[in-house]
Image (cartoon, rainbow, N blue to C red; front, top):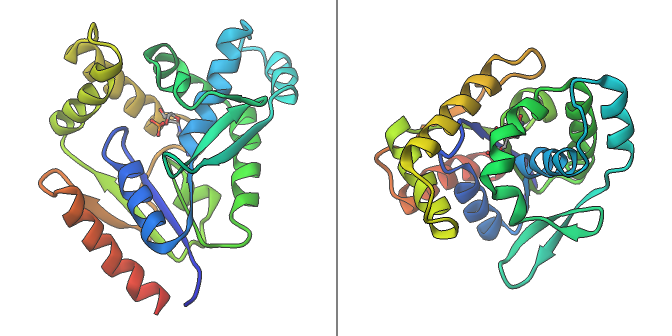
Length: 225
Ligand code: DC
Protein backbone atom coordinates (compact mmCIF):
# COMPACT_ATOMS: atom_id res chain seq x y z
CA UNK A 1 0.00 0.00 0.00
CA UNK A 2 1.17 3.47 -0.88
CA UNK A 3 2.59 5.61 1.96
CA UNK A 4 1.26 9.14 2.18
CA UNK A 5 1.61 12.32 4.21
CA UNK A 6 -1.40 13.25 6.34
CA UNK A 7 -1.69 16.77 7.75
CA UNK A 8 -4.08 17.76 10.52
CA UNK A 9 -4.49 21.46 11.22
CA UNK A 10 -7.02 23.35 13.24
CA UNK A 11 -7.86 25.40 16.30
CA UNK A 12 -6.40 24.74 19.74
CA UNK A 13 -7.85 21.74 21.58
CA UNK A 14 -10.15 20.41 18.93
CA UNK A 15 -8.78 16.88 19.14
CA UNK A 16 -6.07 16.99 16.48
CA UNK A 17 -3.58 14.93 18.43
CA UNK A 18 -6.20 12.36 19.45
CA UNK A 19 -7.10 11.75 15.82
CA UNK A 20 -3.46 11.81 14.70
CA UNK A 21 -2.51 9.18 17.28
CA UNK A 22 -5.45 6.94 16.32
CA UNK A 23 -4.49 7.10 12.64
CA UNK A 24 -0.77 6.61 13.31
CA UNK A 25 -1.48 3.50 15.37
CA UNK A 26 -3.77 1.98 12.78
CA UNK A 27 -1.52 2.76 9.81
CA UNK A 28 1.86 2.22 11.51
CA UNK A 29 2.81 5.80 10.60
CA UNK A 30 5.05 8.23 12.46
CA UNK A 31 3.09 10.84 14.42
CA UNK A 32 4.67 14.25 14.90
CA UNK A 33 3.17 16.87 17.20
CA UNK A 34 4.55 20.08 15.66
CA UNK A 35 3.08 22.20 18.46
CA UNK A 36 5.42 20.41 20.88
CA UNK A 37 8.36 21.95 19.01
CA UNK A 38 7.03 25.50 19.49
CA UNK A 39 6.28 24.70 23.11
CA UNK A 40 9.81 23.34 23.71
CA UNK A 41 11.38 26.45 22.14
CA UNK A 42 9.13 28.60 24.38
CA UNK A 43 10.23 26.63 27.45
CA UNK A 44 13.88 27.22 26.52
CA UNK A 45 13.27 30.96 26.01
CA UNK A 46 11.49 31.28 29.35
CA UNK A 47 14.09 29.33 31.28
CA UNK A 48 16.95 31.31 29.77
CA UNK A 49 15.24 34.70 29.95
CA UNK A 50 15.54 35.23 26.22
CA UNK A 51 14.18 38.56 24.99
CA UNK A 52 12.31 37.22 21.97
CA UNK A 53 11.63 40.70 20.61
CA UNK A 54 15.37 40.86 19.84
CA UNK A 55 16.15 39.06 16.55
CA UNK A 56 19.83 38.54 17.37
CA UNK A 57 19.06 37.04 20.74
CA UNK A 58 16.51 34.69 19.18
CA UNK A 59 18.98 33.56 16.55
CA UNK A 60 21.66 32.87 19.15
CA UNK A 61 19.21 31.00 21.36
CA UNK A 62 17.96 28.84 18.48
CA UNK A 63 21.55 27.85 17.74
CA UNK A 64 21.76 26.26 21.16
CA UNK A 65 18.51 24.32 20.88
CA UNK A 66 18.39 20.72 19.74
CA UNK A 67 15.00 19.09 19.46
CA UNK A 68 14.28 15.44 18.87
CA UNK A 69 11.35 13.09 19.18
CA UNK A 70 11.93 9.73 20.88
CA UNK A 71 9.38 6.93 20.74
CA UNK A 72 8.19 5.85 24.19
CA UNK A 73 7.16 2.18 23.96
CA UNK A 74 5.03 2.53 27.12
CA UNK A 75 2.87 5.46 25.99
CA UNK A 76 3.27 4.36 22.34
CA UNK A 77 3.92 7.93 21.18
CA UNK A 78 6.98 9.99 20.45
CA UNK A 79 8.02 12.39 23.19
CA UNK A 80 9.93 15.59 22.67
CA UNK A 81 13.43 16.13 24.00
CA UNK A 82 14.94 19.58 24.42
CA UNK A 83 18.74 19.29 24.45
CA UNK A 84 18.49 15.67 25.65
CA UNK A 85 15.92 16.37 28.39
CA UNK A 86 12.47 14.87 28.07
CA UNK A 87 10.15 17.90 28.30
CA UNK A 88 6.99 16.24 26.96
CA UNK A 89 5.08 16.91 30.21
CA UNK A 90 6.66 20.24 31.18
CA UNK A 91 5.67 21.89 27.91
CA UNK A 92 1.95 21.30 28.60
CA UNK A 93 2.10 23.69 31.55
CA UNK A 94 -0.01 26.88 31.50
CA UNK A 95 3.17 28.99 31.89
CA UNK A 96 4.26 27.74 28.46
CA UNK A 97 0.73 27.91 27.01
CA UNK A 98 0.53 31.59 27.94
CA UNK A 99 3.54 32.50 25.78
CA UNK A 100 3.75 29.88 23.04
CA UNK A 101 1.64 31.73 20.49
CA UNK A 102 3.89 34.81 20.75
CA UNK A 103 6.99 32.68 20.25
CA UNK A 104 5.40 30.71 17.39
CA UNK A 105 4.70 33.98 15.57
CA UNK A 106 8.44 34.75 15.23
CA UNK A 107 9.72 34.20 11.69
CA UNK A 108 13.10 32.80 12.81
CA UNK A 109 11.43 30.32 15.14
CA UNK A 110 9.10 29.12 12.37
CA UNK A 111 11.97 28.68 9.92
CA UNK A 112 13.83 26.66 12.57
CA UNK A 113 10.86 24.37 13.20
CA UNK A 114 9.60 24.01 9.61
CA UNK A 115 13.02 22.94 8.28
CA UNK A 116 13.07 20.05 10.77
CA UNK A 117 9.44 19.15 10.12
CA UNK A 118 10.01 18.86 6.38
CA UNK A 119 12.99 16.56 6.93
CA UNK A 120 10.81 14.22 8.98
CA UNK A 121 8.44 13.85 6.04
CA UNK A 122 10.90 12.88 3.34
CA UNK A 123 10.04 9.17 3.61
CA UNK A 124 6.26 9.80 3.86
CA UNK A 125 4.25 7.51 6.16
CA UNK A 126 3.83 10.45 8.52
CA UNK A 127 0.99 12.28 10.25
CA UNK A 128 1.75 15.76 11.52
CA UNK A 129 -0.61 18.04 13.36
CA UNK A 130 -0.38 21.79 13.91
CA UNK A 131 -1.53 25.04 12.37
CA UNK A 132 0.37 25.40 9.07
CA UNK A 133 1.15 21.80 8.17
CA UNK A 134 -1.17 21.55 5.16
CA UNK A 135 -0.52 25.12 4.02
CA UNK A 136 3.22 25.61 4.54
CA UNK A 137 5.07 22.53 5.77
CA UNK A 138 3.59 19.94 3.39
CA UNK A 139 1.54 21.84 0.79
CA UNK A 140 1.58 18.74 -1.43
CA UNK A 141 0.38 16.30 1.25
CA UNK A 142 -1.98 13.65 -0.10
CA UNK A 143 -4.55 14.05 2.69
CA UNK A 144 -5.22 17.28 4.56
CA UNK A 145 -7.70 17.48 7.40
CA UNK A 146 -8.82 20.74 9.00
CA UNK A 147 -10.43 20.22 12.40
CA UNK A 148 -12.95 22.42 14.17
CA UNK A 149 -15.23 22.10 17.18
CA UNK A 150 -17.43 24.47 19.16
CA UNK A 151 -15.59 26.75 21.59
CA UNK A 152 -17.45 25.46 24.65
CA UNK A 153 -16.62 21.86 23.79
CA UNK A 154 -12.96 22.66 23.21
CA UNK A 155 -12.71 24.57 26.49
CA UNK A 156 -14.31 21.70 28.40
CA UNK A 157 -11.95 19.15 26.85
CA UNK A 158 -8.83 21.19 27.62
CA UNK A 159 -10.06 21.97 31.13
CA UNK A 160 -10.49 18.27 31.92
CA UNK A 161 -6.96 17.55 30.67
CA UNK A 162 -5.34 20.35 32.65
CA UNK A 163 -7.43 19.84 35.79
CA UNK A 164 -5.94 16.37 36.26
CA UNK A 165 -2.51 17.97 36.63
CA UNK A 166 -3.56 21.15 38.37
CA UNK A 167 -6.86 21.21 40.30
CA UNK A 168 -6.44 24.98 40.92
CA UNK A 169 -7.05 25.79 37.29
CA UNK A 170 -10.33 27.49 36.41
CA UNK A 171 -12.50 27.10 33.34
CA UNK A 172 -12.21 30.89 32.75
CA UNK A 173 -8.41 30.68 32.57
CA UNK A 174 -8.59 27.84 30.06
CA UNK A 175 -11.21 29.62 27.95
CA UNK A 176 -9.20 32.86 27.87
CA UNK A 177 -6.02 31.04 26.95
CA UNK A 178 -7.68 29.16 24.08
CA UNK A 179 -9.28 32.32 22.71
CA UNK A 180 -6.05 34.27 22.97
CA UNK A 181 -4.02 31.55 21.22
CA UNK A 182 -6.57 31.10 18.45
CA UNK A 183 -6.56 34.85 17.83
CA UNK A 184 -2.75 35.17 17.70
CA UNK A 185 -2.32 31.94 15.69
CA UNK A 186 -4.82 33.01 13.03
CA UNK A 187 -3.79 36.69 12.82
CA UNK A 188 0.02 36.47 12.75
CA UNK A 189 1.93 37.61 9.67
CA UNK A 190 3.95 34.43 9.15
CA UNK A 191 2.06 31.22 8.31
CA UNK A 192 -1.21 32.03 10.08
CA UNK A 193 -3.64 29.25 10.89
CA UNK A 194 -5.98 28.80 7.96
CA UNK A 195 -7.66 25.98 6.13
CA UNK A 196 -5.76 24.83 3.06
CA UNK A 197 -7.90 25.06 -0.08
CA UNK A 198 -7.72 21.31 -0.57
CA UNK A 199 -8.27 20.35 3.08
CA UNK A 200 -11.33 18.41 4.24
CA UNK A 201 -13.10 19.98 7.19
CA UNK A 202 -13.90 17.80 10.16
CA UNK A 203 -16.14 19.32 12.82
CA UNK A 204 -16.13 16.94 15.75
CA UNK A 205 -18.40 18.84 18.15
CA UNK A 206 -20.94 16.01 18.08
CA UNK A 207 -18.68 13.11 17.17
CA UNK A 208 -17.20 10.50 19.46
CA UNK A 209 -13.49 9.67 19.10
CA UNK A 210 -14.47 6.48 17.36
CA UNK A 211 -16.80 8.20 14.91
CA UNK A 212 -14.20 10.80 13.92
CA UNK A 213 -11.61 8.06 13.50
CA UNK A 214 -13.89 6.06 11.18
CA UNK A 215 -14.62 9.15 9.07
CA UNK A 216 -10.92 9.96 8.73
CA UNK A 217 -10.07 6.34 7.90
CA UNK A 218 -12.51 6.44 4.98
CA UNK A 219 -10.61 9.44 3.59
CA UNK A 220 -7.29 7.67 4.14
CA UNK A 221 -8.51 4.53 2.34
CA UNK A 222 -9.47 6.61 -0.68
CA UNK A 223 -5.94 8.01 -0.84
CA UNK A 224 -3.89 4.87 -0.26
CA UNK A 225 -5.78 2.26 -2.25
O1 DC B 1 -0.99 22.31 19.16
P1 DC B 1 -0.52 23.05 20.40
O2 DC B 1 -1.63 23.69 21.18
O3 DC B 1 0.36 22.22 21.27
O4 DC B 1 0.38 24.24 19.83
C1 DC B 1 1.00 25.17 20.68
C2 DC B 1 1.12 26.51 19.97
O5 DC B 1 2.07 26.41 18.92
C3 DC B 1 -0.17 27.03 19.35
O6 DC B 1 -0.74 28.06 20.12
C4 DC B 1 0.25 27.57 18.02
C5 DC B 1 1.64 27.09 17.78
N1 DC B 1 1.76 26.21 16.61
C6 DC B 1 2.02 26.82 15.41
O7 DC B 1 2.07 28.04 15.32
N2 DC B 1 2.23 26.05 14.31
C7 DC B 1 2.17 24.72 14.38
N3 DC B 1 2.40 23.99 13.28
C8 DC B 1 1.87 24.09 15.61
C9 DC B 1 1.65 24.87 16.70
